[in-house]
Image 1: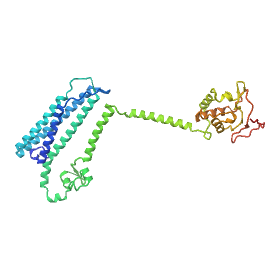
Image 2: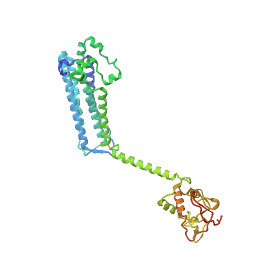
Image 3: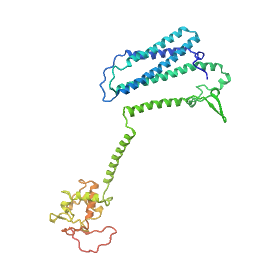
Image 4: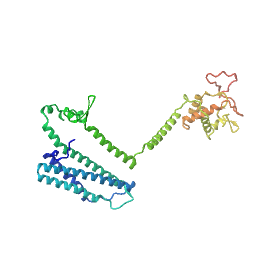
Amino acid sequence: MQNIFQPRYLTFSPALKTGGISLLLLLAGWPVLAQDAAPAAPIPPKEVFYDSTIAYVLLAVIALLAAVIYMMGNVFILAIKNRMAADKKTAEGLKALLVMGFLFLAPQLWAQNGRPAGAPTVVSETIVQIFGFVIFVEMLIIFYFGISIRNFLKAPQQAAETSTATSATASSKKSILQRNWFDRLSDMNTEEDVIKLDLGHNYDGIKELDNKVPIWWQWGFGISLVFALVYLYSYHVAESRPLQQEELKQDLAVAAAQQASFLEKSANNVDEKTVKLMGAEDIAAGKALFIKPGACATCHGENGSGIVNGAPGIGPNLTDDYWLHKGDLGGIFYSIKYGWPEKGMKSWKDDYSPIQIAQITNYVKSLVGSNPQPAKEKQGELFQEAGAPAATDSAATAQK
């Protein structure tokens, strides 16, 4: 391996010199401007506060990143000194050193304003967010510094290799403009690259190359790091989003509410054509509605015998097999729902829901054959369910 930090590999181009000095001046000015800025107006305290330990940890991270920036700057200074010795251009070297002096003066000025005045027990969420933003900016500076140093040190070597390459090899090498978008994205190797990157390890005709990490992978890794930081802050620091267990509980609660609403709508979706026999609980609920003051028992009696307060009521006896109208579930449901106004029975569809009418229907059906005493005389016609054996009682039926 060649040591790219040796002076003979450090070569400056005029454009690189101008761009580097401009960049360093720009970076040096940021902290100085930040130091002289007027204090911001007091912000009303928020309800969210964090333990001061978080602030100390963030300050330590800021200091660590600042140290990394300082060391990377020293590497850049060393490269400039080596280039000065190689080119014998003292004037330009002095200018570069002057710029770097301002660069490393700036972190010291910045550090003077970064130390908190006191040691509070808690810190506000705004302070924590500011520290996080400073860390993010420092990471961007480190990333940019690393790319710049890498390109700065790599440029002379690439220029030397290009000048010594043969015309045959140069003609076979693809230029960046000639490569398609997939080659540029995946940084595909040319024939010359394969020769240079060959490590000399051959396994059944398969060569081992010292390839670079593809560009798309580098970007994906960087985006993953940013996503991880945002995720950790959102879920475990700010707690602005629910964790998996809490989210599951919320979803289960919503699902339970939706299920209850669906069951309620399904239960009420019943009429005289779909009503069915129900269980003991529904029959008991139907009885409670039947004997409710002002309801069915007012005309039919509490036991359905048709006797109210010792005298025949308005309504017929519901305990025998004789019915003025049909005595099956559908017929009873229809009579309760729409009523028979011409015979003194009102419609109950505005008073009870479909499921409540179905419960009353089942209770009335359960009264058939109970034969309470006393009971009102038979009214209507003998009713038999479809498929039931014919009744032997041929007594005449009374008509109302």
